[in-house]
Image (cartoon, rainbow, N blue to C red; front, side, top):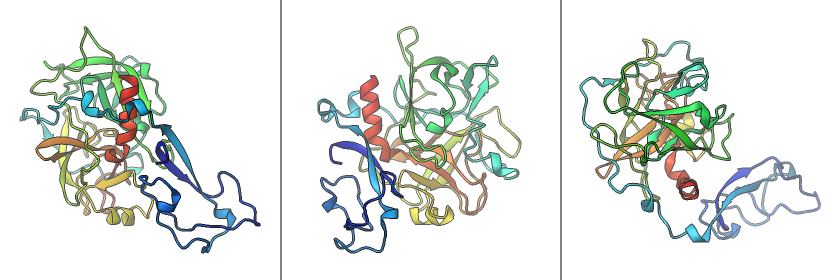
Length: 338
């Protein structure tokens, strides 16, 4: 995209109002990000419009392409044997009916981020929350960390019951906490983050039968309507916050249906999934957690839990950050800090 990795449309004359003496050349412009010129974008006939300079729009660009990195791929850093399913453990609970009362604090509440107080000042991850990509890299949602610093976070891996120390648990401090620069705390747009753990005794996260990295999608991965995918976490249920990790399967909902249910407020960097009739959903405390699908036999993280209108309510499915849309940003950050 004109030498940049990503851009975001800014409307309502953010860069100033054009002179009334100047023509408005283009209206209804639609770009995919692959164009080399604005002429390649979809638009109305040049010079024809029904708008005024009060509606002047522009694009804010970020992350210029580093030519030295343009030929590298994430396969150079992330494990090739990702996406294996951990062994089943009979004590996993399914997340059937979720809490649906007092919903103002549910479904992406920034007051419950999947962390609990350890000593009154330090916060410890207790939810699946972030999802492992490699022994050092974890993917999550930016809104989980907007009020925190990396020194506030202690990552715990291999946890099933957060009140019991289990054989495969490890804890790590953070080396990097990277939130998307364009994250919008009001609209939850660009709600993606990467965490990098500090090595401990010469190693990062150790994978085993119970702890496995998920794969990232590639640019061609389809988010197919109706695909059943896994959500998980220690978020709120009808009985409060559980000690035991819960999980469920929910289907990807067609984008047009999502936009209808959320009154057109979702950006292209979001998608929704769930049961339209309600009953199964992520909730407060699941924020940043993984939305994982079986793609060609490999468990692949397609989303990060972002927000929702309550929990498990009819016509209010969970909304997730669209990981595939962030692949250039993920690549840039992992290369920069690896």
